[in-house]
Amino acid sequence: MICGVKIIFLMAATFSLNFELCFCMCARAEYEINGECCPMCSSGNHVYRHCTEDTSTACVPCHHSAFIDAPNGLIDCFSCTVCDPGQGLRVKTPCTRSSDTVCEPLDGYYCTDQHRGGCILAQKHTNCSPGQYIKHKGTAFKDTECAECSDGTFSNGSLLFCQQHSKCEELGLIEIKAGTFSSDADCGTKTPAGLIVGIISFVVIVVAGGVPVIVCLKLQEALEAVVLVIDGNLLLGAKMLILVLP
Image 1 (tube, one colour):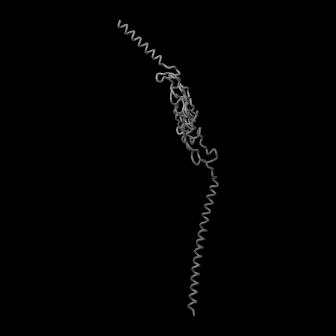
Image 2 (spheres, rainbow, N blue to C red; image 1 turned 180 degrees about the horizontal axis):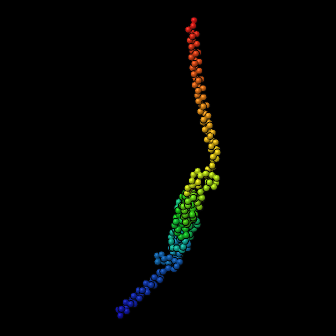
Image 3 (cartoon, rainbow, N blue to C red; image 1 turned 135 degrees about the horizontal axis):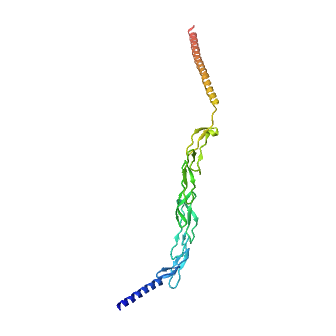
């Protein structure tokens, strides 16, 4: 008899607990507050005043720069995401009361971290170094891919493919400086052998002919100086003779 009473008591307690859980469970479009199931506010709105036994939930729109993107029982909206240029971001889709801002990478940047369809962090595309070419250009979601130039080619780092070094001989020129992985060969014009011989011969003649001329000019200057000294002494002697004679 006692066992039967216990069983009945347990069944009653279990039924009561299940009934209470079912009774307190709110509907899909409701939220529970203070034991009451209140209607949710729609997207873009938040709770201004919770419902009571006699009144429904009072909702108001989210203020500027805030949003809620789902039905809710919240008293505050979420702040809109700011696309920070310092993080390599710009606005793709502006924030509304019912949707957050969607950011995308700036030109020359690629996204390194995404959240809910938007980019929250971006980095600048890699610049290829001299001696490398751009194998694959960077996109909004992928960095630039660089590759090394092969022998006989060059790139300053901004080319989509390496260029062949100029072949000076094929252009009728001479190679002044050999090409490197980052620069082209320097070519110059050829000087005819006859012209070189003519220039050297002219210089030799001028030098050989100029030495006697210079020597003669120096001798002439020396003779003129001696004559001036002699003339000066003769004139001084004549003046002294005149003064001595009565």
